[in-house]
Image (cartoon, rainbow, N blue to C red; front, side, top):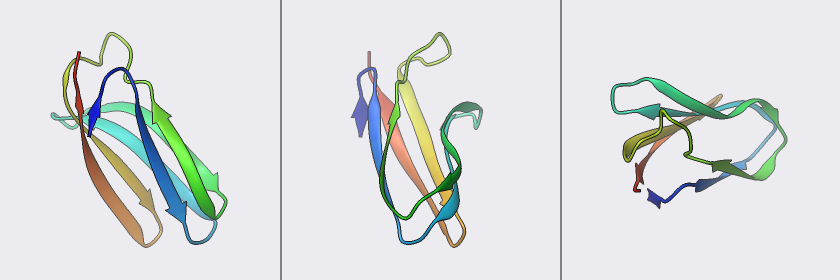
Length: 79
C-alpha cells in the first residue's frame, strides 16, 4: 500500500501470542517497532506514523512474526 504520513495494519491472532511487528527500509535497517510483546487473541490495529528525519519517501517493509507465522508487507511512503 501507499502511506502519506501514516499507514495502518490489522492483525488477527487466533490465540494469545508473543508478537513482533517491525518496519525496515530497503537496506534492511530497522526503522520502527509497531508491536513487541504479548497480544491477546483477536484483531489488533497498528499504526505507523511514518514520520521523522530518517523516514523519507521510498519503499519499506513491515514484518509481522509470532510463533508459527511470519509475513512481510511492502509499504511505499510518498511525500
